[in-house]
Each structure stands twice: as C-alpha cells, then as structure tokens.
Amino acid sequence: MTVQRRDEQAPWQVLHRTLEEHLEALRARGDAAAAAELHTIVDRWWNEQQEWDARMADVLTVHHEINNALVGVRGNAQLLLMGPAGQMTGVRERLEVVLRESSRIQEAAGRLRELKSSLGGQAPHSRAA
Image (cartoon, rainbow, N blue to C red; front, side, top):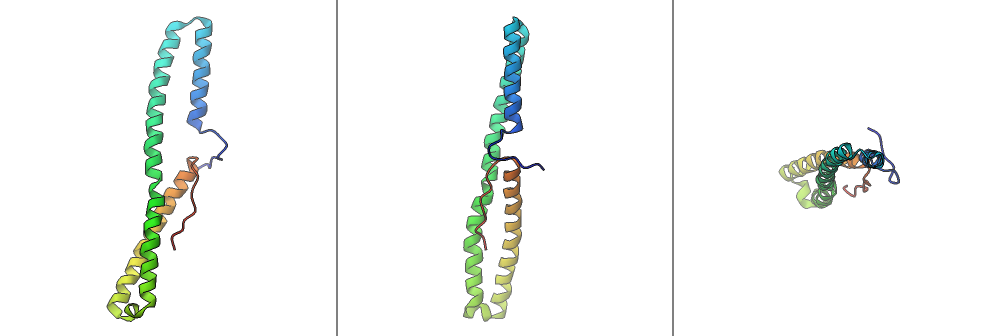
C-alpha cells in the first residue's frame, strides 16, 4: 500500500477535479449533450464516493475506541496479576488469557490504524499497554 501524505489530495479528489475540468471543456465547446451526460455520471460517482468516505471514516475510528477500552482491560488485568489475587493459580491463568487475547485485539486495531494511515487519515498513536 502507498502512504499518502496529509498535504496531498486523495486520488479520487484529483480524479474528480480532472473530470470537472473535462466537463467545463465540453461546455466551452458547446457540446451540451455530452456535458450533461458526463455531469450526471460525475455527480452520481462523486455522491457514491462521498458516502463511501463517510462510511470508511466511521469504520476507521474503531481502532481508537478499541485501544481506549484495551487500556482499561489490560491495565486492570496487569494490576490484578501484581496483587494477591494474581498469585492464585486459577486467577493468574485467566488473567494471562485476558492479556493474551487483548494483545490479539490490539494487533487487529493496529491493522485498522495502518489502513487509516494508508488512506490518508492521521493514525493516532496507540496508548494501549
């Protein structure tokens, strides 16, 4: 995947601008029928792209919510492990399972963060332990 810098436009924004320029050229040449057809196509595509962007933004904020929850889960599990309850065999094993499985969740959230970064969003730093 290519990583887009924050100051660069997304490829679909560049394409939209290019299509709009082509549309203006058709209008300037007096080709109203072709301009109207292209306008309809561009508008339909752009609306779908905007909807996709909004849905993707919602999906990509999930990593932040997951990491916030993991901070509490992992921190409390680690505190319990250090205390007297963590010395009890059954409790210790269960807490270790919590930590191990929360690490898997953290890795999945990290992949979401990488996806967000590759799509041009800023990837916040994880605070999860």
